[in-house]
Length: 570
Ligand code: ATP
Ligand code: MG
Image (cartoon, rainbow, N blue to C red; front, side):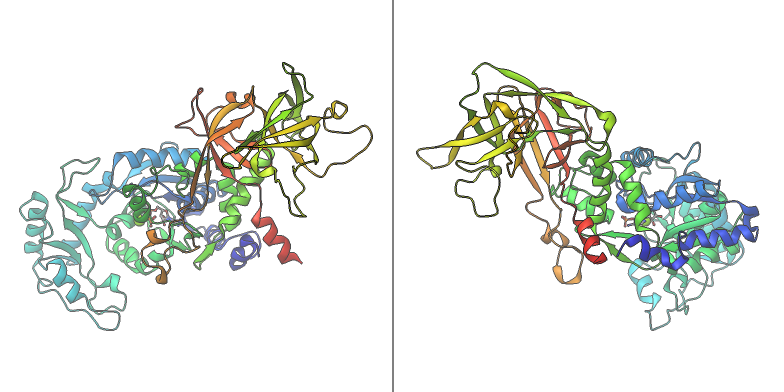
């Protein structure tokens, strides 16, 4: 079933449930009919394809309703956050095609204001300084079935609380020794409402505020107030925050804020054969399981970009998966389908031989080189043609030859005639082997000069068309074939142990001795190309150089998604 069709049913055709809510708000003139969203990443890692779903949702909703979308860094956890991430996030959002104009904010911009709000809660008797150590706090918290116990400090006077909180800020107490907590209800069935911590003491240098602060506000206190200060109308977040919504609303109800945004939760994107948590991705990077955040096997936007994914394909994917209220696993074949569809339209075709097998055309003149016409893109009539050099010694794909072929193998074999794409019919007349190993090292062939361009005037047919390159003119290249990073759909499933146990050992296959057609020497870094019969590739942005070409395989040509859909239609 198409993911789009299933996920949209919650809202009726064409509209997801969030847009349906917004339509209602506009009808009721809530927020004076305005729509203002935000994308609020924590700068503790690179963005991944799951974030792309959130980015597309927030920015597209703003655009659909002539509203605005802010970029806000949720930077309340100085020990994990870094400037490098702040920069990569901006690069990735821009690359995806979205623009926050002058609305880039940081939760840390509000630290002073948040502190004032916290003092206000204390003055109103709604927050207190608690001396419980973290382990004790956990014991007092209770469980899902048992109520918690009030902190012994819960009834401190306002004066004492204010004094202690000010001294927390002044740095008089060690890290972790005290917290500021909301005074709500230790018996609430919702654990988040059991006097949650609002501030903690933490001596860590913040990437923006340096050592100005030794107390930091917690996410639940910061996020809702940041939303309110920015006059966000619809605060869209993932499902795990559903249980935090009462706290979100509680904080805003207690304080004189300029707006009370509505929190709406949607299901996060889970994609098969990969992991999406930044903690896990960080682990892969730190452990050297991948070459970095931008390793082309990573589900990060930086990794996908380096692999050759286009922003258009990722946006199309996000559109097709839609927005649902229930968690689900999206088939990675759909993502691959989207990039194939996009590249099929725009990627010029070339010939490249990944595992070269030498072919000598015995009856072709030794020094002759012909420039043959090749079509750049059959899907794009404006893309024109190019010249491909043909000469006496060629390379074909090792896989395209079998000495003793089974019945259904129609490609090259001894005595057989096949077509070389855009060139001639050739016939294999002899096979040269390495005497020691018995390995086939060369095919001796003849060509039919009458078949130039790929057709025989006598109408005779061949069963295979092979790609090839001229041995003399082709450029050497390294080609990196990527496969799924994990060997099972859900690496985080309960029965698999550590997620790193199911890393696919064959996720990267580096072919160091490939040959590509000379025109590929001019392909700019990152430019998408199709290697005929093999897949879509792009020059690696980091490693490909004029004198040493390196290509990444973006995706193969086999479209598993189209096949699944065809079967379902039957
Ligand atoms: P992670 O679990 O990967 O660390 P996170 O939620 O902690 O993710 P944030 O930087 O806080 O990462 O996320 C920024 C925004 O992106 C949030 O609104 C979050 O809900 C959303 N988001 C994160 N992961 C996904 C996902 N897999 N699908 C959809 N939205 C996501
Ligand atoms: Mg988060």
